[in-house]
Length: 314
Length: 314
Image 1 (tube, rainbow over the protein chains, first blue to last red):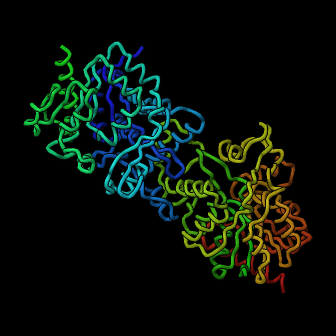
Image 2: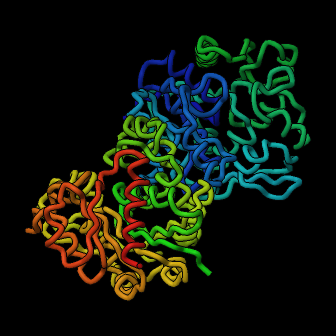
């Protein structure tokens, strides 16, 4: 029986900040984070799962405080030595970070599913929340650009999101299933809220929503479903969200994000800098300072979001 | 056309010291080291080639000055992070060292033969000597012990050479072929000597000699073939050579080493501490201080060995 109170759907760094806030303010073992794996890729013969590791590092307190990926107190001797022998260095892998990819790859090859590996990592780090991949089945985000179709990391890291984006594909999503742990979380009798974290809706959240079973679970959920805005005053806090909204012909506005999630959310946490837009929403809106810079901010936005949930529920 | 003057057959650290000495005293591009790959193994999903990397690091000046494996100025963050998530840590892999295994594995998977990968590494390190694997075909050293048959690294590293050794097998050696670069070295019109470095004759040199084409090349060589003693005053300088000679019922004596190489060598460099044995040899013997501690020692023993070659040749 699952004791999960809150499910959060998350991508990379923006989402991970809210995950950390929720984790800190909720009782232990009551948060389930379902995390994007569409960015996963093979590199240097290893299986790399960037958003899952960002979630793990952030909840374990191991994340780098500024750069938005990788670990704090990291060293780069592997990368320097690889460069000296002409290896591929466009994707930066720290010495400690590397251990995750090696151990994940070894376990995958031995037949262990991703969800079990991630649960093992979370336990090793002492994390008392469920970190669940969106599926144990492979889903690959592909980006259709003016330079042709690119694998996600080729677009995002190697090309620094520079090519103009026309559309996205999530290969394998149609056939991907939820994990048992995700199903149990959605069926939890204690479930109070499903929160869509302020990750990039198109790059990071859409891969989750492309999985029919996950979309259906969201559509039919009996608890409030809340999105936290990834757009503040016409800009994304970090990453290419605003840029790709422009390229997709979508106004860079939290309204467009709420429209994108239509039918999947009951409420929207809007940033105070966009308060003037509140009346344009046809779902409940809560206005707050949503900018997350410090750990205090993460917890404050988590508390605001949960209070909004309970106000909606009563 | 090969300009090789000296071929040295080598295993790990003891042999690598003489390789470095020879490299320093010979003209550039005239030394070919043929190195044991029977110790190669798969670990953490990577192909690891310990003796080849010891040769590369030693000739590049990157080797750790004391420990006999790995790199100087190494860091261990990968290993610490791997330990924290419950990974296998019995084989110590430094952060910079790891780059070799990752890049080697990636290239092997793309179909590149080991000899080409090693040549690439040597070039990256600016090494002007040929470092040649004993074969591009896989050969696996297996150790028959009182605890059963063990893979080499299980015996040597994990079990610290503690099990009593009864015999050795070199799986694949019968069918293994020399590389083209080794064939060219043996056919070099400039070839002046073949030197068996002071590596462990049973664990490190026998894998080479188990390859019929390599044994034949040694048997039929027209230049002097010299072994440098791996035994000084009844002891090995480093490693389990003396221990396994006892276990195999062989006297721990340089005479037994010369006997082991019977038909394959014309001369033997004997340590001065064993000078009393000189008259018992039925091949030419040169008595010298063969202990190699400093770089000066490496070069001194190399010069002594080459002088002995030329004395034999004239």
